[in-house]
Image 1 (cartoon, helix red, strand yellow):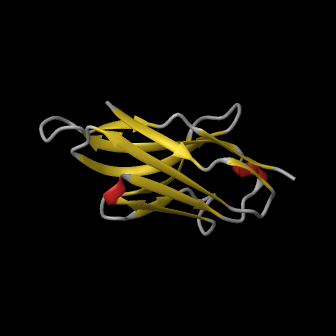
Image 2: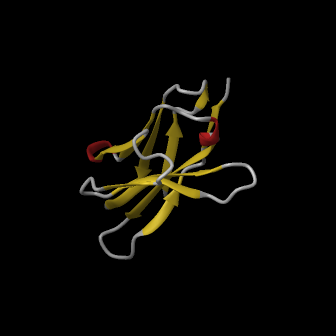
Length: 121
């Protein structure tokens, strides 16, 4: 079994900051990319940011310059620092990890349960 547990969501005013964390646990041989996606009401889930095992990062245009993704490989944890938050950032944020549970076999995607981020005055 593999679990991804997110924390750090909440209510924040426009212009404020939040930091999301996601820790992967269970039987894990190797984690490849990790990242964050979000889904607003009535919209499809979209990519926010990803980070490779070598710390190469990729961001959605809408969050570039405001959000920073990072990871702690020793703790199987990925972070999302969100600054200058806007009302349009309101969504459920999901953690994703592409990983191999065993040395033999393919990698697959795992998802967290989601954490609500609400930006409102």
